[in-house]
Length: 193
Image 1 (cartoon, helix red, strand yellow):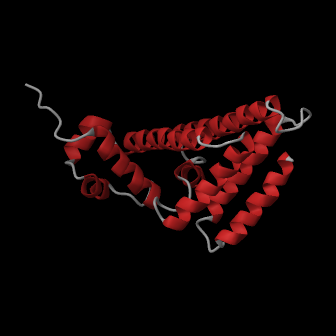
Image 2 (cartoon, one colour):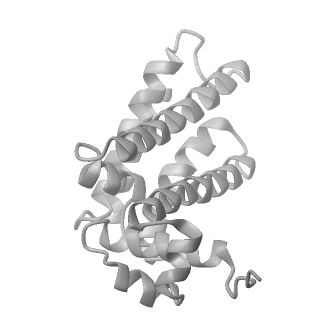
Image 3 (tube, helix red, strand yellow):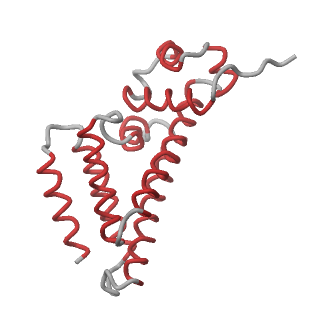
């Protein structure tokens, strides 16, 4: 007779995500995961598979987590331009408050593993493409509302915004001040004028 799980999969998956986000894949051992997740090694294998499978599941969970945060930011913004700025400001704010590990889990992963692991390369590329598509949709919506010029190339501008977002997500891991990061965001936003 199969036993019921004595843990919430989403709760322990978030714990795994947090640990991988903080330490990276290579520096996180199975014992680290057992300790941090608070479940037995056998339960990890039975529920998520091996370390690599758990890492991929954590990365996918992170994508849902970020999408939810950005959806809230966008829906609470008065204009499209404001929504774009708020996404960037959110990255700076959470780094300053140390709510999550520094930087971005997907960016960290791309840097650490994408040249070594085709599954990771595929997933991080998809995540980056999804972010560019989100910016593209926002820019088109802004054009429809008269916030942006009609001759603005939304696809190239979306790639530009995404590149800057990656840059900000890396810079928050350094000694750049909040003022310096905000100056970068101000300059970047001038492209949308």
